[in-house]
Amino acid sequence: MRVTLDGLPERVTIYEVGPRDGLQNEKTVVPVADKAEFVGRLAEAGLETIETTSFVHPKWVPQLADAEELLAALPGPAASPRPVLVPNERGLDRALAHGVTEIAVFGSATESFARRNLNRTIEESLAMFAPVVERARAEGLWVRAYVSMACGDPWEGEVPIEQVVSVAGRMMDMGCSQLSLGDTIGVGTPGQVTALIEAMVEAGIGADRLAVHFHDTYGQALANTLAALRAGVTVVDASAGGIGGCPYAESATGNLATEDLVWMLHGLGIETGVDLDRLAETSRWMAGRLGRPSPSRVVQALNPKESE
Amino acid sequence: MRVTLDGLPERVTIYEVGPRDGLQNEKTVVPVADKAEFVGRLAEAGLETIETTSFVHPKWVPQLADAEELLAALPGPAASPRPVLVPNERGLDRALAHGVTEIAVFGSATESFARRNLNRTIEESLAMFAPVVERARAEGLWVRAYVSMACGDPWEGEVPIEQVVSVAGRMMDMGCSQLSLGDTIGVGTPGQVTALIEAMVEAGIGADRLAVHFHDTYGQALANTLAALRAGVTVVDASAGGIGGCPYAESATGNLATEDLVWMLHGLGIETGVDLDRLAETSRWMAGRLGRPSPSRVVQALNPKESE
Image (cartoon, rainbow over all chains, first blue to last red; front, side, top):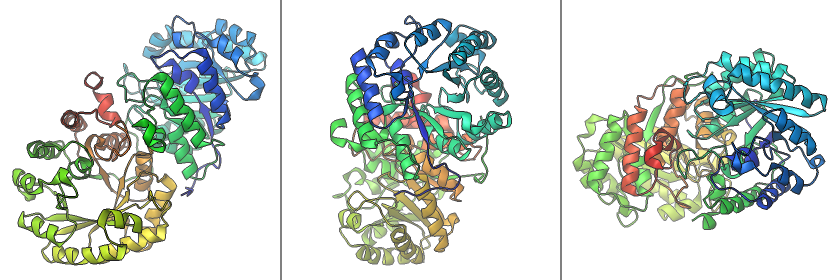
């Protein structure tokens, strides 16, 4: 039953991160042909923005070492927005050489995660991003900024909202077009999410430039998404089938599953352009490639026989 | 980080259904001594209302065939509210003989489920409940009414809100004190939940007499709970560890996990009286008894090593 709710948008753009954030965090390394098929099937299911891969050094993320091959195996970038993650200038060179037109840079709201993930202080990481964003903009590229650990940090605990606003503001001032607020460890709850978005808007980063990126580690991702939508956000990151980020257990999920998100949005009468059955079929196929059941509740529920 | 959100209550009562709705839907039959320990540990973790068992005929629910033994093994009913499910007058006799002071009756919003679950039409089921509720009230018992299939039905599809209101009104008119709206198959979304609650209030069943009972089959339970809280509901059903109702797959969940609910409520600064660590420890113990990992995200996340 489709029943709307006051204060929600008519349409939401799903920023699909399965091929990048999902596969990057799976143990199984998926062959490049399967990745290309995955991206193609996601696009056919109606996902209009798909973060495809990352130009990070293969030493750090062996799962995405085939970035060049994958891009070569896909139809041209004009077909639909297919951002790739770019960590530094060397990554930007590689992206430009392959005709990429959208990139994302990945910052951290906390010193602990900046040190562990980027091997830098926050200041040093911002200094690394600045020329990347500047050159990308000069080349006419669209640039997204991620701010990770926006709701909490495994080493530091609570992350003050001012700190997230500060890092986000610096990245947006460089010339990024969109800011994705990432609850990387999934600890946030709806009040915190609302406060975070309100603080961003107050700092001059309008809701039309915001996206949210929730991990479902504590089961809060969809409730947090609802809060974000009510606060004016209309771009939501999700991973097909909920793949990626299984730091704990086989059955634990990382990213919010795109299917679970689509179920809620369509139930709320919000357009996404996604064909849910086709998407779930794609996720079941990928779960088979990964050799484990899909953590998406909707994928399981829509296909009882195969998941038994 | 505790951050409130406008329009939410300061305190929520969790109506714990793990021992009844949870264990009733698990394949494994748990020994009565373990059930008694389960109820005791849930109470020690701060859960003040625990639906303990059901006086349904053992032929239909063999998992709860030990209802009398379990009640005898627990401390007296004065300790804390411990409703039991009572399907008919015979069940009420058994409940009264064991000093039960709170009961619940279980109705259906749809003819299909009434026929399959109660072997009756809706009219016939209401005729069966009426003398149960009347006698229970005359004996001074507190009575809860469940209305199941309130958001959708596997055979009938969408369930018109008027139909849910009609059945709910009839049950409340009999003298029930609380109405639990059950999305038994987990298909509802937040707009539908809000509309359903508003329709109940309009029909004279105030939000202070409502509870919500969500299954997480499509991952919507917590987002729906948030919508219900905003609509004025302050009683939420949940099952410790998310046990129960696994019609599809090992990893699929039935009931909303109490831990996932508590995580959100505490994050929103809402009091529950629950000690989350103690509760999660209890659920891990019960998962061991059931021989499968807990489907609760929070239980998995709080104890990475044991759940690996």
